[in-house]
Image 1 (cartoon, helix red, strand yellow):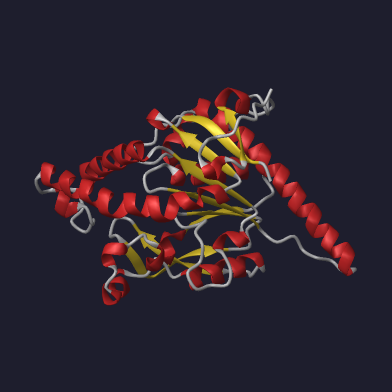
Image 2: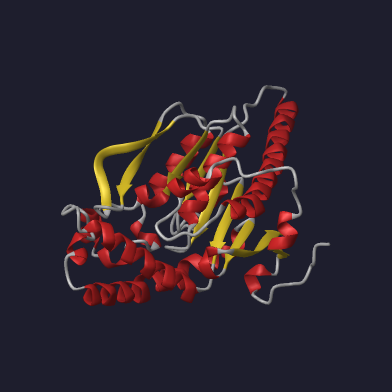
Length: 315
C-alpha cells in the first residue's frame, strides 16, 4: 500500500513519496526493451545504471507517461469537439531537469529509447538545452563567461521560440548544436527536429522561471522529471566524470580538457573542485534546486546512482 508520509522538505510536501519497491510493484507487465550492450552505449561516463534499474524504475515510469499522454490526447479531442473542428494533437513534450553530473542525460537517452520501442509508431526525438547557451564569444563580450550555465548565459527567447515551433508542428526546426569537447556552440551546425510525436527536452534550466519572458519554458511541457541527489554525492560524481574525461582528452588536442589532461593531475582536480564550488554548486543551490518542486516526478538517487525513492506530484 502506498504510504502517504510527507517529506519534511518544503518542495516535496506536494508529492507522494514512493519507495523503489513500491514503485516497481505498480506495473508488472513490462521488461527492459533493450540489451546490456545498448544500455552501455547510452550511459554517461560514470553512470552505473543496470538493466534491473531499467525494469524497476523506467518501465513503470514509461507506463505513467503513457497515462499522461492518453489524457493529453483526450483533452485535445475535447477541444476539437468544443470548437466544432478538427484539432491536431500537438507533440507531447517531456522536460528533464537536474544538476550537472547527476545523470539526467542518461535518463533522457534511456527514456527516448524505451518510448521509441514501446510506441513503435511514435516519432520520439531528444534535444538538450545546451545548444541554447550563448556562444563563448558572446559570453565573453557580456563579461559572464564565468557564469556559463547560469540563467543569464542562455538565450531563453530562442529556446522558447523553438518550443513554440515544436508545439505548432512546424515541419523542420533547427536547434543550435553544442559540443562538450570544444565547450562551445558549433558554428554553422544544427540539430534538426522533424515533427516529433514526443520530444524530450533535457537540461539544467528546463524548469527555471523566466527572467524577462512572459512564458516559462516549462509551460510547453506535458510531463517533467527532476533527477535528484544530495549535493555531496553529485560533487563526487562530477569529479569522477572529470577524471574519466581526462583519461580520453589527452588524445585530442582540440578537446577543451586536453590542457588539463596533459598537465599536472593534482592541479587539474584542484581546478575542478573550485569550479564545482564556485559555479556548479552555486548554480544548483540558487537556481536548479528551487525548480525541483515544479516537476511531475522526482527521481532520487543515492550511492552508485541507485534510485531509492520516487516522488510523484499529488496535484
